[in-house]
Picture (cartoon, rainbow, N blue to C red):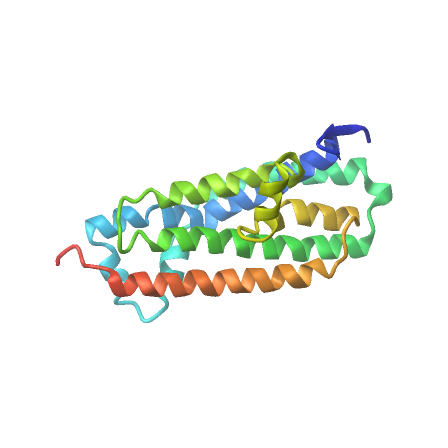
Length: 212
């Protein structure tokens, strides 16, 4: 494979984009569509009803509805990932495929945590535009992190660990990095998930009912 994008071959770059499409549209199908509707529910008073449910308000808000259209759109990601497998079948090991699937689970947890974190502030500050920020941040992961400046790459591996969304799962499949990175990724995903739920609960306490 010849270099196509910042040291990545065409099929490798398509793999990154395929992962992004899969996570993006699957995320929209299961929780993105719900979290983006949270602002309307808060303003119109529907969120008051959510708080009466005997289950986690974050869970109910995130997964209350489902979008079949977006799930079907996620097939575009599977097609791009499949393209990589077809082109590079001879170099792919079974163990790397298993590790790759684990990396995708970690990536989805991080994706969800980022959305939930930013959506949380809608409860205390409606119409804040924060969900647009989450969408822009995750939009950066449709490309390998190596195309960005070194300073940004450092941020993407540490402060805002979005490298674990598409770049690291790809490199796991390539066999370029140690599987131990998944241990670190799991820790980061759990930490972000706990943080997002903590921020959610803090904003629930600040929530003011539409009825006063």
